[in-house]
Image 1 (cartoon, rainbow, N blue to C red):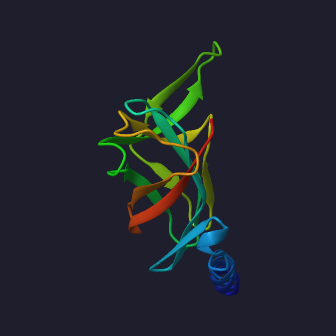
Image 2: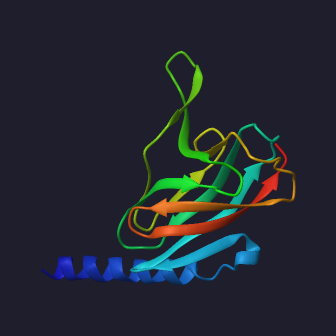
Length: 159
């Protein structure tokens, strides 16, 4: 019984520390904290590749789940720049061929961090309505299973 109490208190202390650390960043420093029930969900360093109108781009960021329960990114949109956005993963097969495939969701473990980055999970923006120029800003609307809808502003960067 005592071991269970210690485990519960340890989990609670970790959750409090993660929550305290997660809310310290400012939006101007590249973090977009969104407080949800049970703790913060924080996105950092969101960016989108520059691309031509009609083309395809990708968005990347780091997502930290300060909650004591897991969550999942289950959808994305970017209505200002495209009507076609989705979650994707880059992977390699046993022959070394690299490909990309859509995924239904991206798990964000409790107290964990997931990087959306080139060569891994990312957000695809297809059939762009306009050119995405370096320095522009794009609003990404992320849908999480538990946290709900979170708007993230991403800076357009060079490829």
